[in-house]
Image 1: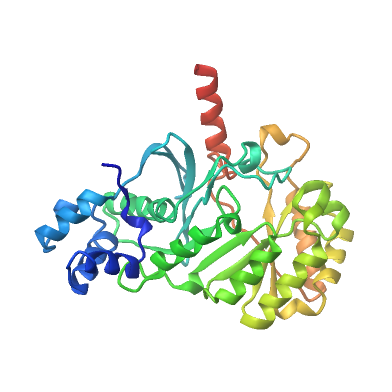
Image 2: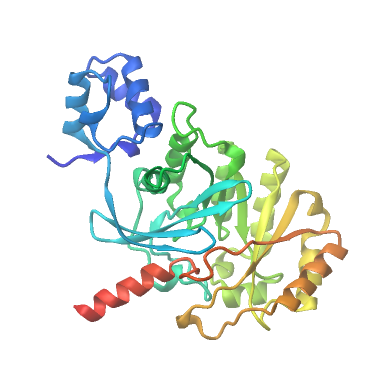
Length: 356
């Protein structure tokens, strides 16, 4: 029998599914706790769960749908996982250690169609969306890795910034957030979750109206349409004015701050005039926007881009600061491994292509 991932079920969905088969709500709660608090990988090993309930679950669901293909561990504590899905596709997930806790960066699609010219994730076109369960399972795999090391630590933060465009897989993103935030399970607080988009304006409106109570980040990377279109082809369809109109809707309705992500590319978007133009673009939104400057991780296939020197990063930072813009520089993780998102996956697929 073909089964589906139990991680695809929300708590309400699992409760309803079990109720239809004559099981009490309390059994759904127990199953949920065994899954997410005790990290069970086998229904039969779920202590205290009624045998009939175990049988029904095992007949219709599986718990694990991906295997660890490889893993890279950085001296700074960053762990990059390459997982192989049931259909053979590969995805990346990253576990990062911060002063404020442990965060996991999850992937939402197999490949990416956005096509940013500097990004390793887009080297391979999207072949499919991940199910909500496959996104949830990335977090569970990272947590089990910590458990296996005997570390009494829990994943406390999430960033949806891995391979793919999260808003292009919106329904599964919403289900994933429902599961991951549920108080009877991992209970990761919405204020500790950030979803990043390359700028799908229509979905920003939907995201706002759905009031998911998680943070929003927008990959901007340029202060004007001409430059942004050159490095991010999505800007041709959704220019900055349209994107910022959607962002303003989010800001007005939620009063949550938005992070504008800005990868610094040497001699492309990192000059003083770019910083001044960016400050002008942000304008009166200064109190509700933070610019996160991101050092570029070079990718062999995008050799036209180089990393901005540290002193130039500092100068760019200072210009924004003097213009009253809230700005930060992203702390780098995993610089001694394949740091760029999608890089490890791309290398492995190339190896397999050569071998075949």
